[in-house]
Length: 493
Image (tube, rainbow, N blue to C red; front, side):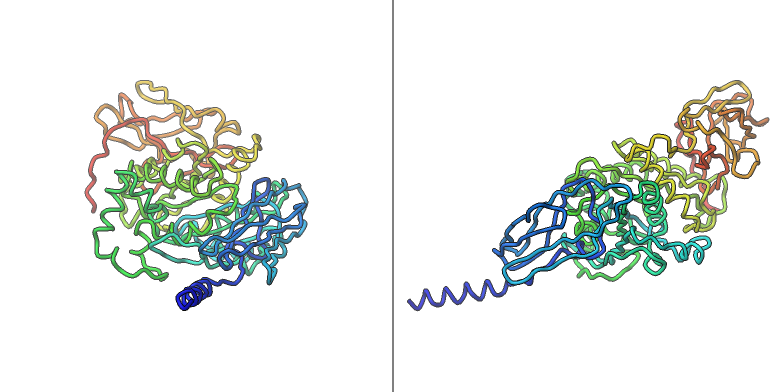
């Protein structure tokens, strides 16, 4: 009898220690946008073994689920397709036997997940004409979620942040690229749009990949994971504070600022990162393949779109117009687009050679939006590509550069009326010379008196060429090279 009594006390104390108030996930809050036309997970916590009733004003009957031994619950509700012009405010509720919680001012539309480092984090308060741009940022049916920075050794479910109605105050520090992207999607589709920014400046790509994914791939394990695990840094206590070194460590950011969102239904991802990995080539391409694939697996929503921004021209404090190491990194970035349902946005014309954080973010957000409109939403009349190399016809003293026809439907031009810049040509000696260039219809003719027998052409294939060649839609031509020569080592001055 005494033993039974003691056992009962221990059990009661155990249950008491796990008692939790009913709550929604940190991701699910007032003013949020629910992804249209997909099953929507409602998740949160309560005491273990609690029956939770999930309801929403658009479903016929509530969904009932029970918390697990850790007090976590999850239920799935259907979500209708959004209708153009429908900005009806909805609610979602959860209830147990003691209380009910309700999310208010919920919209049904599309949700996009935006991440990366400083050029994605770059706020609206710093863009060109920021004061005027912010005055116009009143979009009650665009909702913004700015995730708080955190790091963790293990995947966690908590995240700091709130869904906010888009206005000059909430947009002030919000990602400019993400804002302009969401704004164009919203204005074109006439539906609610939710934009999440979760990232941090100076961060490396490996920081956004789980430990399990890195460990399962021999190249990634050797390159990124083991050097960290074998260092003293891996034994340190991890807190949420920023340091330039910490944002380079593998998997910590994934655990703390990506994993909390994996239950959320989304349309897709917009990504702007690369500067922190600029010394890598094929390893970075492979890392991004694995990151994209692992995110798609973690979110469990199929092969969702992943649109990313190529790094902009920058000189990295070395004024040498021949250096091309950053160009080779941009080439490695371009190869990411070989993966299914990915597309790259170029920034060769909107960079600033001596500013790593160029302020002209509106074209970048717009190009991401045009990519999504064409590739995801089926607006096939919206051109999203700049001129892309198709082939080069080599004559003895000149060459004709041909572009993919669909990328120059609107024609070729320069944004300043001058001749195209940053073409280089070489002969069999593999020495490149600056070329003269002329637009001829939808081709570019290139030549140089210094090259008698032309065999190779490069365009914008140096570190910091801010280009002027574009199509009639104002989208910059994509950098390229026709050769496969090894890059000569250039001594730093």
